Image 1 (tube, rainbow, N blue to C red):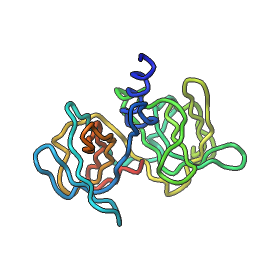
Image 2: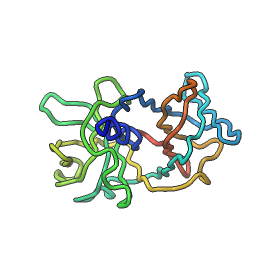
Image 3: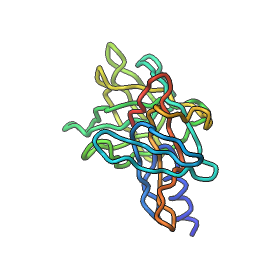
Length: 198
């Protein structure tokens, strides 16, 4: 039972594997409507999804950041594609606020693109003329990750529901309740036109 609770707690982080008693689904898109405790999220060519805000839903803001914001000991999360040499090529990087350190720590499969992974951990070293090759350490391992030019970089910080607005881009971390309703446990909301890339 304790193991199941631990797995579920990880799943409800901003980045983490699926919950043992039901899969976690990340819904990405723009908020097209808000009706009380319910959001409508439309992503690309997909059909709009109705998402109910869970009790105590946690909200984080995402704002544009730069490669210079990634420093030694920064706590980051990066979706990446495995390379032939065993390193990873970042699809995006999220730099967590200090108070969010430890969120989703580890290295595990992700759903941004086929065969990609998510690595959340502390930056060790930055190398290369533009500091775009970094090591990221987490409990049980370390990965070398290259952040290519053009890869989106955002800063994540704790926020509240005041930033949940129509038109904002969002990543909703959801699971279904017993009635089949899609319930958001966490929201990552883009501010100032930022699209949360994770």
